[in-house]
Image 1 (cartoon, one colour):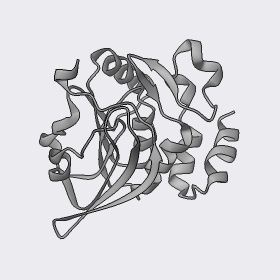
Image 2 (spheres, one colour; image 1 turned 45 degrees about the vertical axis):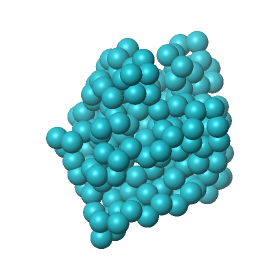
Image 3 (tube, helix red, strand yellow; image 1 turned 30 degrees about the horizontal axis):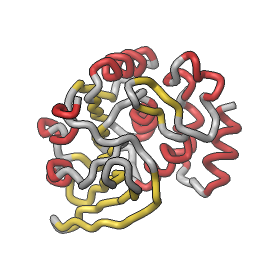
Image 4 (tube, helix red, strand yellow; image 1 turned 90 degrees about the vertical axis):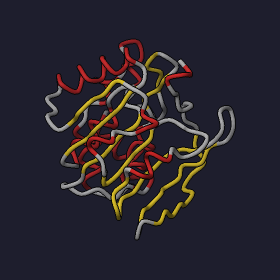
Length: 207
């Protein structure tokens, strides 16, 4: 089912980066899906994981990962661990992943699952991702898996020179665009990629 997902949902839609394809083939998405939705683990859709959060559609995970243009030496920050699936995909490709989840219960479950799968290169944190993870900055790439109304300035500050940040942006309940941001000569360049629908970005004071 996983091989079929990669063939029909990922490669057929133009994802060509072999490291991304191999990661999507390797990581057991069903392991990150709640029991009642496991039968749909490899379907072409997001799935609920509780706490008004979702595990993203497989194609979107692959698309966002490919757009970061990662290499094996990279250090990546993820804002919104959620199920842990995106962090696992990243960890198959890069040297180290730092991931933050604001919903404490999800943070605990995803950290446990990532440990169960044996990932040694993922650091998990329970907290508000708006301010990034300054102790480990700068990051070669940053991926945000929930939609803020505007791009958090601390994340731009923590992006390394030549780095890329991918984030869905849009007001709550409105249309969102997936944006790719690059930092070159300390200048920020932003480009719209796709119209998307992600769960809203949550801050500590929203809970």
